[in-house]
Length: 423
Image (tube, rainbow, N blue to C red):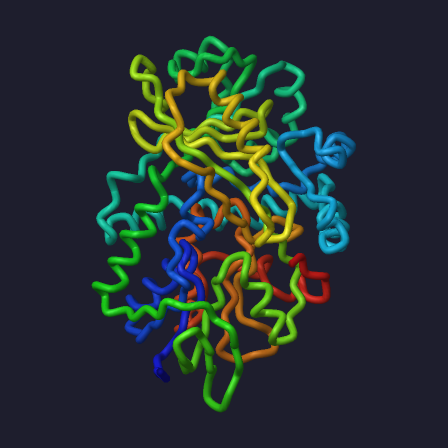
């Protein structure tokens, strides 16, 4: 079936949904095109952290001292599938080139306006979607098992402090007082006080889908196989027919690179795979009040309710559709069982998703340089849920000819053009 509209949004994760809602609020006729597999979206499996301090990309200067362990798959923060190495080697080359202090500081300065606007944008979205009870400024904790590990993060604290990101330093006793659910002994911790969290991010996505429908937005459930410019606009081929519009927003997460490549854009995008699993808290355990990054385990534990938590693994570099490897989430779960008093698992199988990431750790937001009416909004990596609502507002600004509310020059797609793309 053929259909015509003002603008098409490809992708139904947090970025795509927020974009579709913001565009609909501007009075545009919007069609959202997405396969409709809620659990497959990266936003579904997020830790729920919305932090002004999420300004430090994965390519940090500290990476070099850890590189030998990473290459041996001896560090839980990263698992590399060597069968996939020929495909990811070009991407890794560019990623490693970013692992310098000057580049880290540069990225932090660029990301700060975006992350600073994130929580307020979430509040606006939650008020419209009726999910304010799932959003709270809880703070979040980075916990260090040894004084040496804490000292090794000094550069991170310096950058946060220089950009005015508020945090408190806690010793082991103060941490236990702040979070009595923690039974593991930590040497030090950093509490980022300006951080909020979304409880059960998948419920927020569902509420946004309902809000979009109530606002008169239309939805096509299907995968996009063709994205082609034509006279006066665009034609989008999907499982059920063709959509036509004057403008298109490409917000398909880790799948965005394939569609962009069909138009001649070879962008450096990585599918960073990650796993999570839910566990009940022991009936005698106090509730966990905020997400905790255990730096020694390279995993996060996030509360999803008063009596359940989500355990999230480190990064796996592998083909997006490769068979799951549960070794990281199993290790993270064992560590979590020594950090909290856990009950049994609440999932039959761990969840797996792919984060759309760039070598510099910054999203791709802006107009496509060679095609009128095409807007890019992908590559958010670990901050897709956090910055999705503000990205949606920026997309609506671009589509309606307004100046974006946040500077987006550092996120221009041109910076990644010509770099090999990670499949």
